[in-house]
Every structure is written in C-alpha cells, then in structure tokens.
Amino acid sequence: MQKRTLGRTGIEVSRIGLGGLFLADWFNDQAGAAALVRRAIETGINYIDTAPTYGNSEEQLGGALRETDAPLVLSTKLGGRPKPFDARDKDALFASFDESLRLLGRSRVDLLLIHEPDRPRQYDWWEDFDSAAGLSSASFSAYSRSRTAALAGRPVQHNPRERPTKHPARSDNGRFP
Image 1 (cartoon, rainbow, N blue to C red):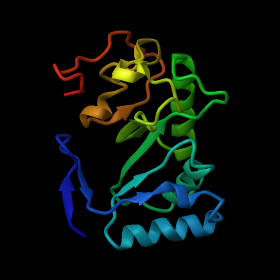
Image 2: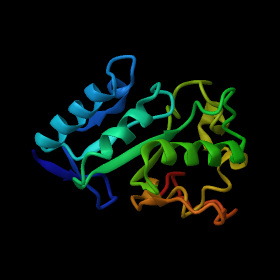
Image 3: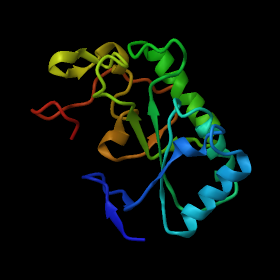
C-alpha cells in the first residue's frame, strides 16, 4: 500500500483509509468489525477514522484494536455527543473526547477532527457561520495547542488537568498552521 504525508503534519498515512462508520453494529457485530480491521491492516491500511456519530463505531474499533499491535494512525471527531450536543459547551467537548478515548481503549489519538464544520447549522462551531469566521471561542477556548494539536499534526494527548485557555495561533487566512 502506498503511503503519503498527510498535509503538513508529517504523519504518514496509507493512500486508502478505513472509515469507521461500517464498523458500527448497524453493519457489523464485534467479530465482523474486528475482521474488517484485520483485513484493512493486512492490505496495508494504517489510517482509521471514526466518530461519536457513527453509532458504536468507537467501541467496536476499540475492541478490534485490542487484537493488534500494528502501528496505526487513528482519528476521531468532536460533534454529536453528548445529546443534545452543544458545540459551545467546552466541558461537554472534554467529556466527549474522554469518552472517545475510553471507548477506543487509548490514551491518545493521532488526529482529533471537527465533525462536518462546513455543513450549515448542523453544529454551531462558528462564531459567524455565514462568513465562516473563527471557531467558536466558547467551544474551543480549552482546545489550545495540546488539544487541537492534531489539526497541526501532533498527537492529541489526554491530560484532564491540562486545560489551557489560550486559543492556538492561526495564520492570516484563519487556518491553523
């Protein structure tokens, strides 16, 4: 399987990744999810993505990951949990991330993504949606360099005592470096 660097992150990922939606019990039981992950690894896939909104995908993936020590790049997302979801509630975002780590059986993920930031009004990520100006400072004030580092390509580490309040620096175009 060919690999390439993911953007400017320095993270090497397979050109094909495994989307976690089909690991959920809507499509697979735990044995089926584990078989799918094993087969993906056998074919050279090293990037697996999941999200809280993909049913029990994080839990099924966590079970499958217990069966392998293959070097993988894992991503999950913020959005959709807890219900009702409020993208401006930083404590709920921390709780959601903590729950993702618990379900995945991990202390870290390689990439922490924002679920569908470009879908109008699905989640209230933006201070001004119409101009897509700035992540909601209320929601993401706590996700500074240590928590949004995945957006810049460094692993996101869980540390419940480290909750910085400074928003990460953005380039002139409003994107993370």
